[in-house]
Length: 473
Ligand SMILES: [Zn+2]
Image 1 (spheres, rainbow, N blue to C red):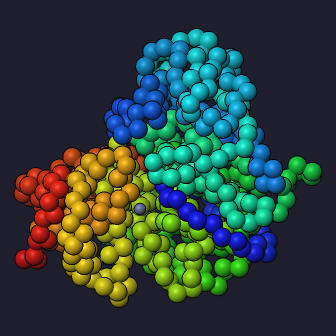
Image 2 (cartoon, rainbow, N blue to C red):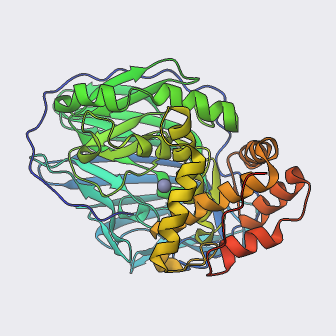
């Protein structure tokens, strides 16, 4: 998602991880969707609407000194269309050596980031199947309009691994149906040499060492999770757990940043309690933040383990608004996931507005003040963007964030606090673990606001001219 710059660093001391609590029953089976998959309008080359995935089971061996990755991916899926052929997204930097479907060798062709598989026997609509892909290579980021994204390297020596895929980087490290509406469960087992730690989505369910072959770290996450939120970090981390929230908050960071981290991320339990009070229960079994030895332009809301750069830890809570932002994405973006990328304001406008709510709650500027300040900046910039459909090149334009948050503030001042928060709670509840778009959100706001709101949303989302912020009644 974000181009980032590197800087040298001194590796921290090693420390053993604290294993996490077992998953609770909050997770729902992967692969549940509100509607059939349709081609992604902005990125039609990613994803295949002909099938949907229930679970990814990734067994990886990674050797940091050589950057060599060996992978076996088992993709449990269901066909939505008849035929023997389907496509998985996988970087051409990786080499596929074998593919099978339901245990029978399948033909495949791997070109331009697409692994096209032809099963020996045709699949019928509704038929479950399992596709196994053996692959290897030295992964590298994918070149996209958003910079180099996906699998990348940290600045330690030898380098560790970070993954920041939003929106298109997931195929840089595993074969997937890379569409935000194809959400699945994940099991990721990664073997690394002694001395390295592994961070992935969900709960660490096993860690076993075989003499001479390293340690295998197994993480499981019921999700469901979109592929762009899947993560893997390899490095030298200390693990700690914060209590006081509704689920365990386990964090991972370099030892050298321990004191600053404790201060900067110390209020995650309070943030979680605030957001839970406002939006309903936290949608997953676990949360946490990982800090890697790299400077990132922006953190990323990788599911259950938000990713931050070392530059986001200063011991002064200088990036605390971003700590709130990434947590808030777990309601808005990760649990309620956009149906198509053009609805990006449902992710970024909402998470930005949650920054403002945290600011107000924690004694900083009020949401009224922050809305007025952001509106003034937008007006002064004089550059106008239809944030409801910004175009693929402007997905992460600053105006999607600030005008999106102002849109929510305009809604709040128009329908009042009670109806506004009822709308957000209904949004998080009705579309929990599902996908949705702007039309569904407008319908909920009209229902809870008890009035037509099409002109408000049209002017804020689909017209270039910046509307005035409504005044509180
Ligand atoms: Zn965001």
